[in-house]
Amino acid sequence: MEVKAQIARPVQGARLIAGQPYRIFGAAWGGEAAIRQVQVCSEDGSGWREANLLEKESPFAWRLWEYMWTPEKVGQYKLRCRAIDAAGRVQPDQQRSDFESYAANWIVPVEVTVVPEPQAYEEEFVI
Image (tube, rainbow, N blue to C red; front, side):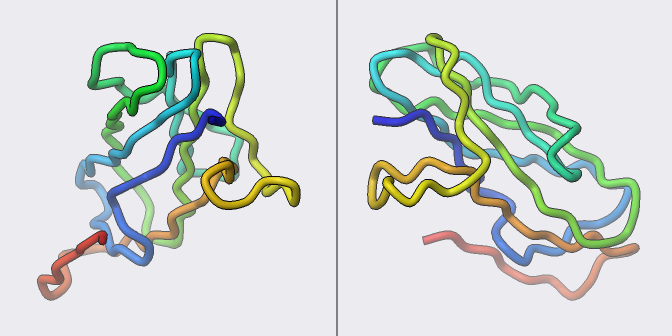
């Protein structure tokens, strides 16, 4: 099992409000080395920030995490997260052609739009 983190919320295409805090959260998992860190980036991949791990450390287990983000500017953002395990393995940025199915562990961005003020209420669901 390869080290991986994924964003559960916000969902792809979500509209967030500038200046208001938003809880980005998801899960991370790995193999025999426990998840030690999850990082989140809202920029071009250069401004990684540490997320809070919510569950107790354990090998072969999911680890929930969260990060509070306050988008200051209106515009399009690609939110990214990556996991790092106790052995120092870091989730890769790019897709690997030799990994498919459950072994696919590259970073999958979530694109969101930050708007200046609240829009009409919209439910967001992830299935």
